[in-house]
Image 1 (cartoon, one colour):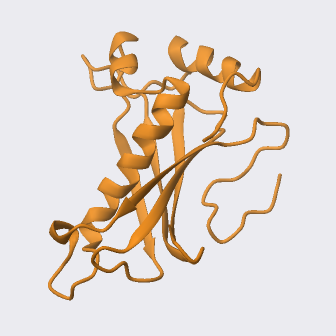
Image 2: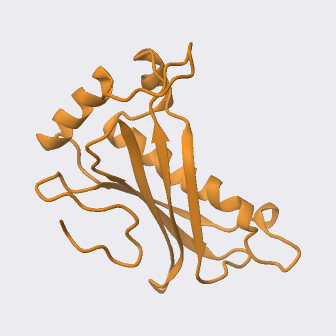
Image 3: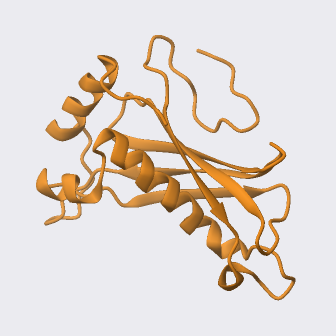
Length: 160
């Protein structure tokens, strides 16, 4: 078991594949600000989602692919930490990193960095696989996820 850093929310499992990551570059828009002229805290889920969508593109972990597989994966946990404010027109990056899990769940960590490299925010989401008809959580890896994890272990995906 590897020691976690301040911005790592999930345990790293020894021998597991390295996290898969994708980074998006953005600029804070006027409509994303609060009355104090900084990023409204309620925008962070959207920031995270944009990076997560980019991550999904590189490894095929997208909502349409899940629906094709007959499963859904709603967010069951969301956590954000705010370290520095983001101001109007400020450029920043958001990185989403898929972290290996032995369970039937999707663990993603997020890191928001300013252009000087300092950390503005961090967080995570946990998504559980569910049967869309019954709404029941799937306790074992669905076939789609088991295949995905095998491909991940075989190094088929690369971060960007």
